[in-house]
Length: 466
Image 1: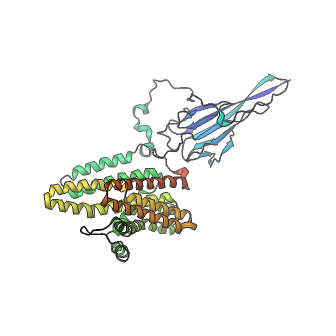
Image 2: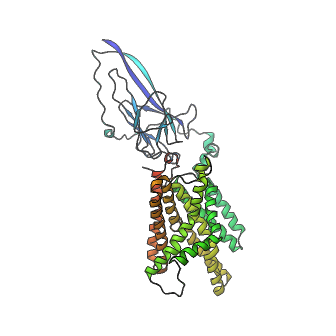
Image 3: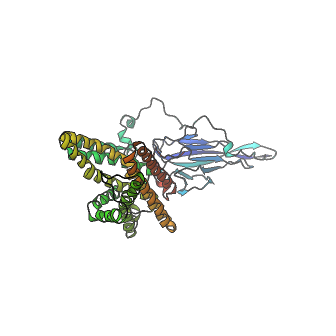
């Protein structure tokens, strides 16, 4: 009997991303019995540049062939491989696997590279007694790992040279600011120039150094969190805390936690046991300062409730990542004012009286640098950790008081341990600092998992999923 067998040719065509333009779009052929994995891992069949596509997971998605039908036609599935930022089919986030149709759009992440699935039927005459039964393919996880990678076809000559290769700054566009850390580099240059301009002015120089180090430390936390938040909201959080420290609100906190509660701090001449010092630090430093630094977070939550979208989402606290970002920003304001307004002037004045003004200024600068850098494992760690619980309480309002209590007491406890061990033992201080930093990093990792906007969060080298 003579009939027609249909042979299906299928390809993936990359239509968006770096290096794609009309007429030069990478095309990847799909074979009827070959799974094609897309991701950043070199073992994938479609390998995407890890530096250019940070929103793409190492093994992000797979195109899997289905068993051929009796007439010889093949079809394919698109499957998400538990990617962090999701796989989108025609604009809808994919759950599991779904069969592909000609012209379907596949996007890796919310704003990642886009592929179009295309297939066509080539009919050819054939003679057969009866259509053979299709042979089922082995399970997806039993496919052998290919050793070769699909390449763009046709390949360009190895010595081809384009204008944008000679002048790369012309073609980078938004990626220059989004992926090349241009803004931190520009700010570094600006701060260096300001430091040269303020040579001989120790107070101004100390202020510039402190702001730069604090900004760099905060930028590190911001990149780890991976959620965009307007810079003016973060600066407002830091400024609010700094202003509170200059108002009678601080006196009220001191009266409550160090007057009514057993939080009075010991004087230099007072002899005190380790346990008693820990209790005093818990009330007089931990509970007092962590509640004070949480005020900007609570203000942001209340203000956001009174404004419409999209301002509500930009300002407010909707999830743990928001709480971490505003909490650590508040800690930056606290650290800067405490360091520049209390510790450095006091040490500088004492050393200057004993050894001269230049010695005092040098020691003040030496004290400033570790205090600001240490805020990542100090004030930023405690406040960011408490901020995680504030955001979690907003996300799970039925358990809010239980969540807030656990977070508040834990953050205050870490703060008290830091202050106490700093007096008695340097080795214990290191252990507590590492522990505090680990608590903050664990909170950031968990907040990224819980984030309702996880697919829209920008990825980082530090927390890229496998």
